[in-house]
Image (cartoon, rainbow, N blue to C red; front, side, top):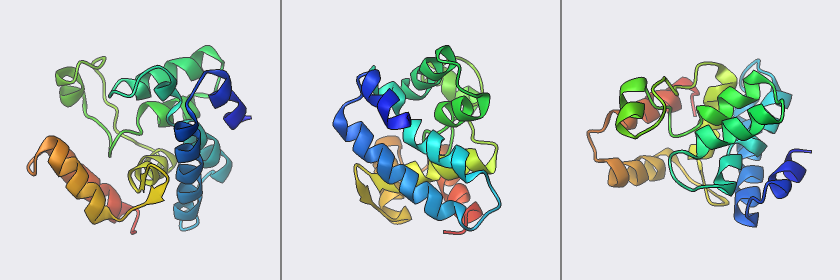
Length: 158
């Protein structure tokens, strides 16, 4: 059903392939925790649905809006909205031109999907050092997002 929705809204095949890999990784991570694996799988498959409209930082918010309009549960909507990096706090969201609110993953399911997405580059699984280098290059070594990524990685004990 999730893959069908991605196709229906016009997501490119690379987004669908990436989303399948993120779902696999998220389910692998989730084995270490008492979590809702069905929620994780569906949200991981839908996490990049906003990329059918844009590939910029807004894709999480746009994806959440698409799912809200289609009556999806808040638990999935929040995962989609909060999946970028290790989350974005309100002050950084404002600087990025996002609606002013926290986009930090709160539940374990939210954290697992966000980090599974970090660990899949395209369709290829990568390690945390690759992820950190990628974000350091994009944001700078001292950006607070780097420490959030490290903390999330430690929290999930990967």
